[in-house]
Length: 595
Image (tube, rainbow, N blue to C red; front, side, top):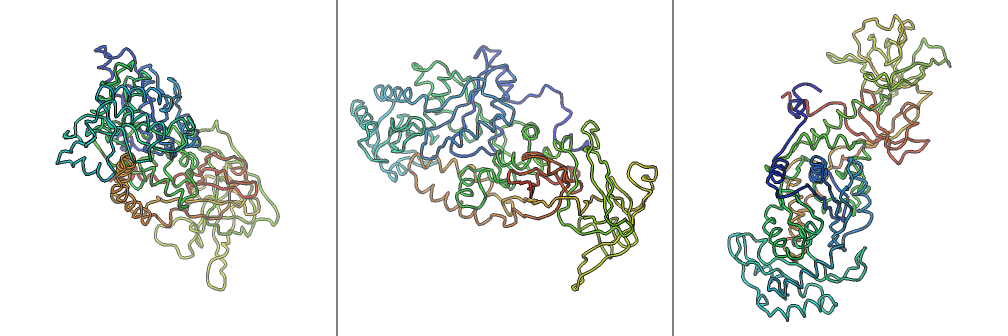
């Protein structure tokens, strides 16, 4: 990696890095606000985690590590309609893949349903909550706007005893969904719309995958989340910037339930991760899976961590990426090329080199004895001799990339053309003598002669030539393989991918509060998003690969020389290995930095 890229990426900085969150935590510890650091990572088990979650995940776990504290994993399972154990297990796998463990313990929001219910009853008795009967449309109209205050619900001042009885009947299943909600009594005229009597409980007749049919009312995230934090003794609740407007509500819940809670956490927000041509909405990703636009949550075109893992990314590369972009409160759009640069830097150091041909063109070595082969030794990594070597065979029939031959070369072309010499990697120098064509004028075979005195590793192998070094395969001693080549899922960059995640948050709030207008808006954006999908996001080609590479297993990553980095896919068989292109060889981030 060039020095200008290192400087742009932040490499070479002192080991002791910091950010505004860690500075704030140091100050809290210095002032005695907390004796230790205890964080938590609270994913929703309603989908697979994607690259956008990594910033929060890494910050939660890394902060605990840095300050010698603990980090809990707590699943926010407050919406059983969309949750599943499949998502739980995959999230756990993703966390371990990134190199972390929940040192503070594993929890679920449903662990605290009884305590949430107890607090809700207490608030009703204390006049801090009431059962509301406004319809969806009425609730939306009463809430007001960003410039106009809301209006009190006609049920806001109903007697505490009446609200308590109705709440008990809600739990008993006596009312239909949407007919009643339990709301906090805060301030309908607040300039912060989040504080305008937010919902605490809604009726939902869905069997919970952990609690069964014990409950038909479920707490809302803004109510259950701070309670879970406080019950677990969390000191710092770290979250992305869209929750900044929710912080007054977070503090309000903790303060008014303090008599039942053992701790008072502090919420600190940071800018979320936005990336070019990358879908950052679980709602949209779910639509891709359920609509059959991709092959599943781990389709290598997806930005989910399981998909990136299948594509050949490593947890170390992801952590390096998050470290490079840093932590701030200013929203920004990160170029996807930076992530690729991190992946490329990681693989360049550790991926064995192999040879593969994606678009094969036959080469016949006319002066090579028919039926004879030569075993040659090639290095596995040019920078790491400790990674060893492997053997390949050389024969009369070879494959090269079709793009490595031109019958009439353009200016500056140094590959194979009539009269030119090239070096075959780890083998010999060969001279192109001509080619054969079919009836339509297409080249079907290239004819070459070999200089037997230039075998790799012998004194003659250092003969200087003007031609390039090409990769190749013995056509009679290689395996057919399938290569899957990927482009971004989105055909072009515009604001849609930046709006995707906020739209999801907006729609989730709408779902909880019954605001169909926002749901319809989100559906419209989803349809537009589907229309923008790149029809060329996946190209499947059949090529050839060394037998040595085919001896690997799913997850093994290689640099196919002059082609790119590829990872063996679980779809591979002994007869047909399958490889996903992880990333190309060219560092587009480096190119941008130089500009």
